[in-house]
Picture 1 (cartoon, rainbow, N blue to C red):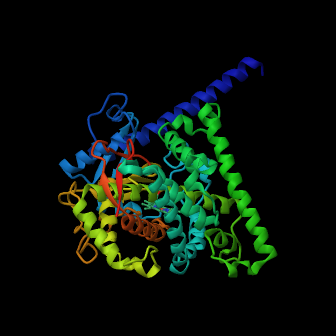
Picture 2 (picture 1 turned 180 degrees about the vertical axis):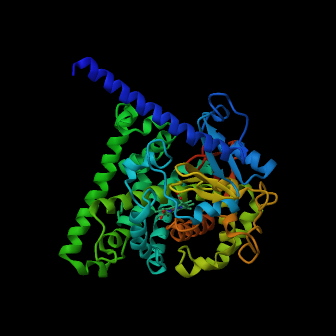
Picture 3 (picture 1 turned 90 degrees about the horizontal axis):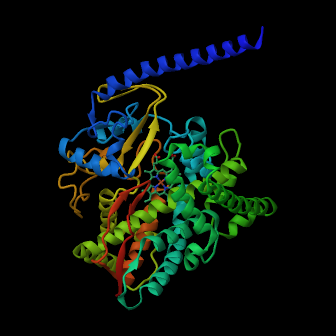
Length: 501
Ligand code: HEM
């Protein structure tokens, strides 16, 4: 056969594959259109860009969606990502619960919401699916048992003392301070101490500390990758200067964790009784946990879980705390109520105890309403491997579906006056006939947040101690705008005045 024939054969094969793919896509596409027609669209369609022309930034989606939810009270919203790909968003508890209860995997491929985080977090609990996730979730659950969490209260107290010192040093003469950054460093400090027993002066150093800087930059860069599918292809991203920096930072945080893991493994091997003399941390649990076959986690799995805790546990908690400081300043009459509760519980003490935590009921209500108003994790997603029936419609396999927690928190069917901050909103929430899926800041179902009690305890300790020390007043000259990014952020931060009590 001469070479001309070979070329023709190759071209014909390529053409046949392309045609076959197009036909397959066309069948799928028509199926998507049939389904999409049954639900409300987020807005007018552009002939090429679908709904994308409506959003300049990813966070614009939530602003528009919440207006639609408020006006028409839909249960599912369709967004066309160009005219070729529909995206189905569950915005009501009835539709969200079907997705959250099903064991539906996380989307981690190129162009998917979690894909951008994989080179940093690997396949830890947040990004893994299927049997790997099931095994590891079972193995890690004991690390969040109350008996373990109880021992962290001391860490929260000590770290919060450093946080208060930091705030005092930057808020001299009643000047207002930007609160979100020091709060994020404080929550990272707490996680490093609880997860790895890593003791350092990171709060004093702030982003001069290389680990703080790395985690902060990685969080932002991974979020930027998330909105640019091209940059999600590692090989393409590596060619950009941002990509080079990103992978260097990944190497740095991986090395940082690897060194601590190796040192700890050697200590545990050489001196197994060392754990009896000190507080156990997450790393001890990760190294010693065993599955039903007696197998432990590999070194890579341990590192992935450590990095996952750092990412999933620090920015989320910092977001809630920052918005809570904001709301305390915005609603001084509620701040007074919370403060009175703190004084009643703590009397003359400055350290919070484990037994104080369940008594902090007004703080608890305040945190809950803050998390409803300023949803810490606005959006999560899943990828359908099988068709799933939602609201009487079969959503086809192979599409990504989103659960829009922020829309659920503001759905007028469940939350009348949803834009109003009301401390009494949750007073009888548990006992009322309200659907538990109408409020899911920590998600719900099998893949709910494993760290929620850790976070709630930590936030209560910090709030009690900060309020015991300062009265919080909003800086009225600073405009605060909420942006629904990966976590809920304030556009130019949050500024408050901290007046000593
Ligand atoms: C106020 C603070 C927090 C909020 C609002 C929050 C919220 C959430 C949400 C919404 C999810 C579901 C994510 C998804 O489906 O993609 C989640 C999962 C997760 N969170 Fe949290 N989280 C917080 C604190 C923490 C802390 C402190 C830790 C660890 C120490 C943590 C570790 C995790 C992990 C490992 C997962 C994945 C669980 C799984 O899929 O099995 N979170 N969190």
